[in-house]
Image (cartoon, rainbow, N blue to C red; front, side, top):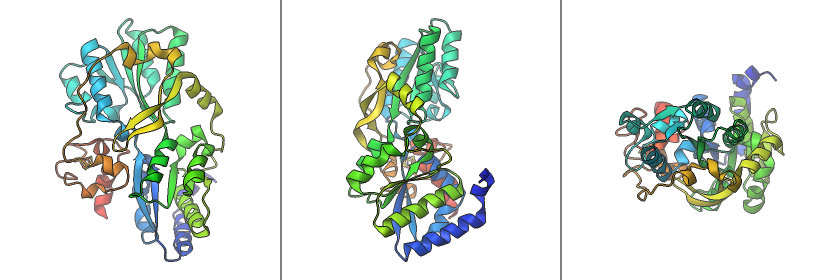
Length: 362
Ligand code: SF4
């Protein structure tokens, strides 16, 4: 099918009707783990279309949102104390840390540059011979291979002033924590298409095996998402729990072996801290010991105060699907995309930003 076919309104409506009849009057709670799904579902009106049969909860799949304040505080302090140039994706600049943000620090003289790829940061390091450039490595399994390849390239080109402050996260361990939380109680997970391109559907099979929660990997077009939800409803109704792929044009069971090899070479699996969830065993990628000379956390030691959350901000609960953004007293008043109090309002993939942009019309 051509891409336009995945946006065919009649096919989407037809499948939505099949979801409602398959549900047979029952109502299911599915979590879309990925922030891109949250935004896409709002944009295409799927929440309203499926209302009555399916409740959609947003999960922790926005990388900027799950990055804790302590990471940002450390990045700022590295820039200040060691006079490094900080290179970052644009979303991170406006995220408030405990006391400040990269945007405020840049206005006060910190060297912060926005890049679109870690290879751009590497090029900056090459052009600024000797000046340390620290790339803020924030993202999931989708972004981590790009960062890994920038380190490979730095080694190949002998660019010694390029460093990475890694806060990469792994999705499957977070799913297990969510599955264990008795307050969340999801009937199924809608799994992220782009992460799954890299790790493959096989990576989720322990979630299904250990927790018997139906899972479907899906893409970002309306028909992809409705097909994914239909498959979840069918699993629930039929009492099955397995990992299905509703995005076969991009995702395989095995994933991208080459990218996985790159991750294994450059990173090591570590415990990681998630905003709102706390520490999750084996949920992060730290830089492997043989590339320790690229690890900004080791190369530029700093001490930072214990991180502080923003008073009144419920991002941590929003990221677990426990509260809706509108339940936060700051939503759409003090906290807007122009004046964000928490990261969920900053990022284009953030749940609060999506509810602000699309949800308030409902
Ligand atoms: Fe945090 Fe703002 Fe969302 Fe409230 S509305 S949870 S303050 S980001």
